Image 1 (spheres, rainbow, N blue to C red):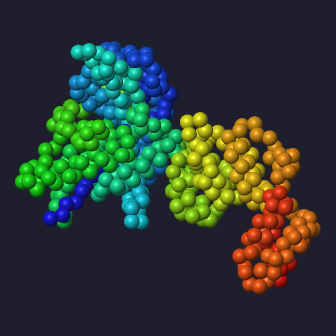
Image 2 (image 1 turned 60 degrees about the horizontal axis):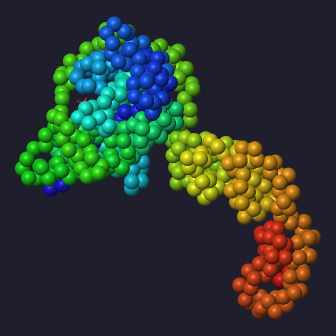
Image 3 (image 1 turned 120 degrees about the vertical axis):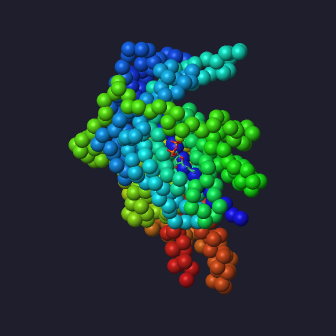
Length: 475
Ligand code: ADP
Ligand code: MG
């Protein structure tokens, strides 16, 4: 008996606003505990939330990017529950009327082809604080710096059919929010995380199986591992004649397993009701139109354009489009050098390995690097010289004028055919035996002769030109 896996993801993307969603406190990560929590974040009585307009713009930007409806009217609701890191006793979220609904995200499938994943809704909400258990013997510390940080919760339909598809979907959404500039995507800091709802059903069954929800997966690997573990566990339970319990589980990366956290709460446990402290959010066509006009070029469109206009290979385009900073760098290099294929090759074969904490794509000197690529394409400098110059100057902000540098260092290849011919004649005269061998049909001697000419020219002869000239002379 085979089983079908069914997965729906709830992704939490922390919006990259400078201040919180309902207060003026900063959202910066890593400050000492409770230094970034205002009275609103602390849930003091009598204070009122004020909605951050930038969070609304960011949510709308996401909605338009996935072809969803940006609701002309949405409503904030209170989700009531008790937890020490939630001093108000409720989380402000959206329930019946979310700001974004019914969009789709296209993911690549492993064996080729694509699949469209339905996004049911994306709603705005505030994050809770954090409980700290280390450094407090017998106690828990509460840090409310994160309380009130704006989140966009992106809820997919149960359209995903494997851990691989779930990872592809999460990666796609991750790429999208970074392109849109609405989330820094830093998964280690928890800025982008997801809950995986997983169930299995007999192949061919119509009804969905009972699901579990594995919370707070903050890496693509953990998402994949948690799903694989859950699928195996649920199948074992069902094949053993048992039933899957609908519950919330926690993935433990150290033991590579999920464990029950709490039984699943139903929506009515939360006593959702519209928050009387906040007005409904009403967005008019002008507001939404302005956001639509300022959407950046998205990764799928970029890849297609590069393949169509620049003749890039599909897999190269895929690699270069993965990260928005790399994509922007490639666009700039391609435009400035007029050599998109060379720019793509240089990025992949040279620059990628140099990127790291100290050297970012944004730190590349585009003018200098483009100049090097141009000189190589024109045959003015050898490919090996171009490579060395990129190595030396790509990350130097105040690089010298490359044209002048090539002259100063004598890097220009010999393009004067008279000068080249003299060197060729000289080498042929010095190696009569090899010339004889070549004429007797030993074609591989040509390589030796080219090598001798390159050496005699101090490496400055243009190899293509040398080959051509040599063949002509030997005929
Ligand atoms: P809740 O808000 O109670 O968590 P929802 O119905 O809003 O429940 O669904 C939350 C997530 O669970 C969605 O991503 C949805 O696709 C997914 N989901 C719902 N039912 C199933 C199921 N049987 N198997 C897998 N995923 C499911
Ligand atoms: Mg849920």
